[in-house]
Image (cartoon, rainbow, N blue to C red; front, side, top):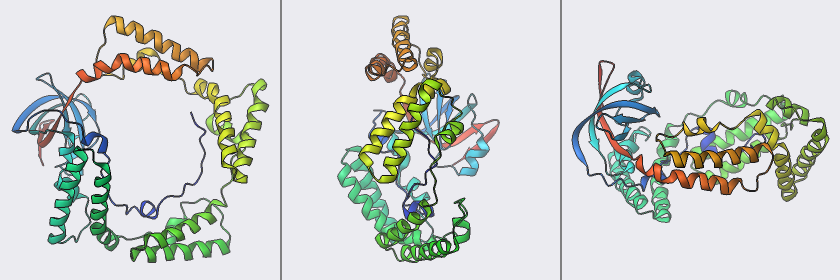
Length: 362
């Protein structure tokens, strides 16, 4: 466990604004092929196993597991469905060839700002389909280049629809007592940043936001060692207290001095010394709890081997013996790996959902 610090992180202007260009986060899944042929208007019945909002996992009455995409439905419809774990559902739709097929152009278009012209939509559809094909082939460099072309088209629309927060509302998120001089400078930088961002001058606007946070971060005060322990509700033994406290203070000083290499070494030493206390305060799950995470049953022989390995992992954690931990986890996962392949989720796009006596159409 790494130390928890309430440090202000410098984030990009687009993220601060909430106007960041939408990029899918399913890249790793997009290349996953299931080998299932597309079928039209198939109906499945089953029980909800997991709910991820716009996607759910169900255990079908036919013995198959389905990864259901609800992307054709509105957020209001999905909330109204209340697809809780254990709910019985009947779903109409189609089996897909790959998980990336969830995220077709219609899905992408939902995230676009208003005002995009028909001509630009046609270009975007062509580019987006290129991206999907490139991702399936794992041609990541070319994928990035096409995303840049997409962003060049969409960014002006995002900017046109962007309504930045008033300075007073934005600055209120920082619970610091700024001086009048700093407050005036912050407001000036904030307004300059908005003006430059609206012109699409990303580099110049980024400089203004960097300057903004240089002022803000001057007000951040690192917690003392005592405050740090109190925040985490951790108690250190008298024997270790002075040594660990010194490591903490040395790490803070190296960070303050800008000696990044030394700071990293000191923080690593601090984390290592604190690790037994972290683990005592936040214990690992028992073996039974760990195995309950998996949606499959293992053989008795494998179960015994897994328990032996997991017990060794727990012992290493409790006794601060971490040298073998990586290899132990590797052995643990090697035993489980064949079981994961038996639990294959079939990608399925839903067009109609029946649950709790109600029908929802996408």
